[in-house]
Amino acid sequence: MTGTLLNVGDEIDVVVTSAKPFGLLIESDSGVPGLVRGGRAAAGATVRVRVTEFDAVESRFSAMLVD
Image 1 (cartoon, rainbow, N blue to C red):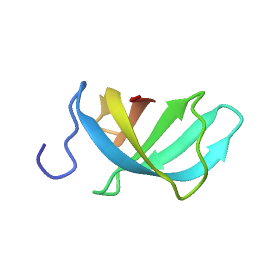
Image 2 (cartoon, rainbow, N blue to C red; image 1 turned 30 degrees about the horizontal axis):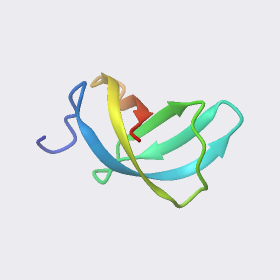
Image 3 (cartoon, rainbow, N blue to C red; image 1 turned 180 degrees about the horizontal axis):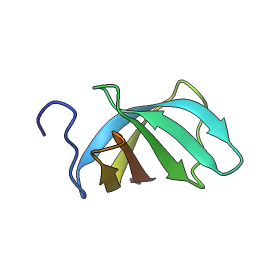
Image 4 (cartoon, rainbow, N blue to C red; image 1 turned 90 degrees about the horizontal axis):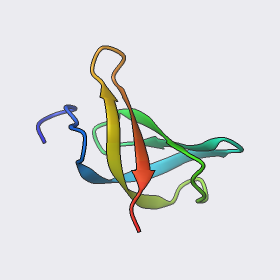
């Protein structure tokens, strides 16, 4: 992984910036915001996720928690 470029299938550690009823708002170590739908964790927690979608134009991604 180079810079902010994320690829589908990448497993990365992210910080939970906010927990909402619909999921977790997260941020990669390079500052790219993302969303985990339906996940549960406290704001400020570090969790491991797998990238399921990356939008280079909008510079954001979707992910799922990795057990």
